[in-house]
Image (cartoon, rainbow, N blue to C red; front, side, top):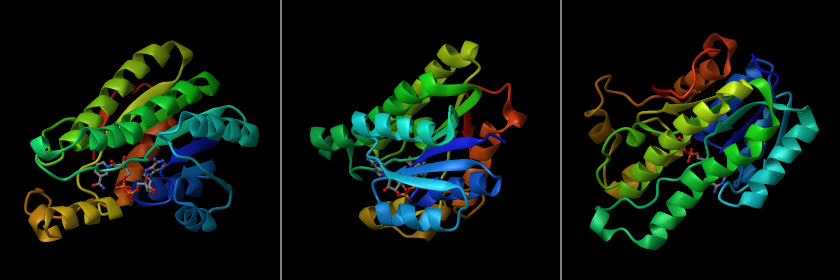
Length: 235
Ligand code: NAI
């Protein structure tokens, strides 16, 4: 496994589960999020974790987080970009420019800032995993801004993978299906739906767990995936 990792969105859900999975494998962690209480909770069970408030939509924050990680643990082995927001749940024609700017600010610009500042300081053999979504590969009715932003994450991932290959850095995305986190709870509430409404659409008839997505992320970060880059792993 890698030695050090910077994880965004680590205060909750998939980011937290990824911190737990990598932490259990002995990886030294820098955990970031805008939710400092949640961050402290994630870090409390982990031996080698430092935390830092970082809004991924603010480039200076991201630059500072990368510098903090390098200062703490040396050249970065892993960047996991899990911070993300769902945005408006409404037909496309009712969504506003401000809502789109907010979703793109976090999901797209945040991903770009992370790559822009981390790639130059990553160790050879390093690995980036961007958390996209099945909404980055398929239609997602009532979530046009979110789907567009996650398609963008897939495009950034594929392009960064090709550009970084010669430096020995891999860039992949996981594309989770519906996963049992606060984001899905909020989305269901906004759409006036229940978990049962959702699971009816899922062949396995259940939500994924954050730990199941984290396992896929940990795999992509590991030497077992040493020749895999530019891919979108649907979970
Ligand atoms: P979550 O809501 O549990 O966690 C998201 C975390 O991102 C929160 O801790 C939140 O504070 C943080 N965050 C939000 N805006 C931020 C910002 N500007 N800067 C830094 N941190 C910020 O949600 P979940 O489900 O763990 O989501 C993680 C990623 O997985 C997101 O990118 C999401 O789009 C993606 N995803 C989630 C799916 C699901 O069904 N839960 C399915 C597919 C993708």
